[in-house]
Image: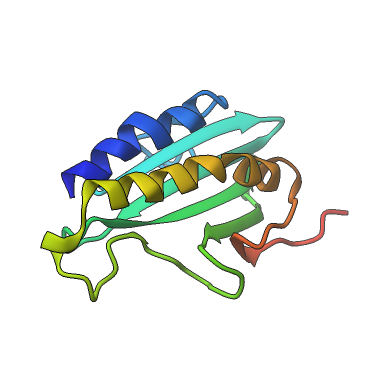
Length: 149
């Protein structure tokens, strides 16, 4: 688990920090919504919109996590603009990045963790394009993307 978590901190998080995101201890400026200890939550605020990237690590200490992205307005009702899950292939609604459930932990290697993180770092431009302009991607499972009129 540590190898995957370390690679997230060393490679994936810096890719989003370089794009203007920052670590947040609470979700979208709401003091009632504290970020869990098994999550990495990144946010940036631009033009009345909060964009976020959240990594939810497996609660049973399996070296895996899910990646959620989205945008909300900063107005009083905090309207959802769009959100998605980062997935491996078209048609998936959710994907756990890291060790599959069926694979014994001792067979999960650092090289496998490295390949997962390299793939997610390479997807950063697609994630940013979705957050900034709603550009669809086969690697994003769109959960909510209302038309903006």
